[in-house]
Length: 251
Image (cartoon, rainbow, N blue to C red; front, side, top):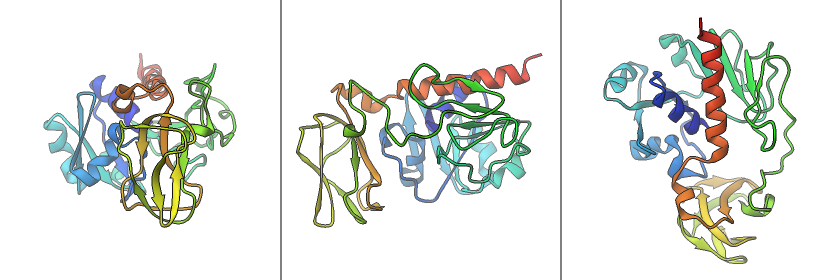
């Protein structure tokens, strides 16, 4: 979702920079700007993010016409750049330290935040009627722990690590998989597809995983193009972030 938000704000001609942990665990890697940390750059739907090592590189990177992405898990770079808007798109289901005083407008995605206390605006991320709703007082629906439904499938479409260890994918993003097929392994334990479809996302080879950690995502709709485009959910939430910004700063 962070990539969807950054992509939308950048296309709206806002100056965006992104902060990340040193070893991101993105599943939908083809449409995740955080992959720039491993590859130097990541292109997503015509927009480029570039890995930079220091906050001093952010302004020159903007002049290149690309989004700077910095390893900065505590977002200390905000003290240097003093942003007008801070968006917490970690989606950790809890607040890891974001404060309403971090910027003139602080927006958080999903559960774990109280609007009016922790941040200025919370955005609903749960699929359904209220997806993308702006909340200015209170909080989103609680985390259910159940993945959103796509074509009638929910938890079944998610690949999970069967044990702790090193993850080794056997399939690539965009490939078709069959129900029961071994898609990856963790040590001697197979990771089998519970439904057929297209592999929309999977963790990087060599990633250390915990038991039951999300390791992949199968799209039962079977459209390979979906693997390389921002999801409908991310676009909706990104639009809500842009709306919140426009509402706050409009005169």
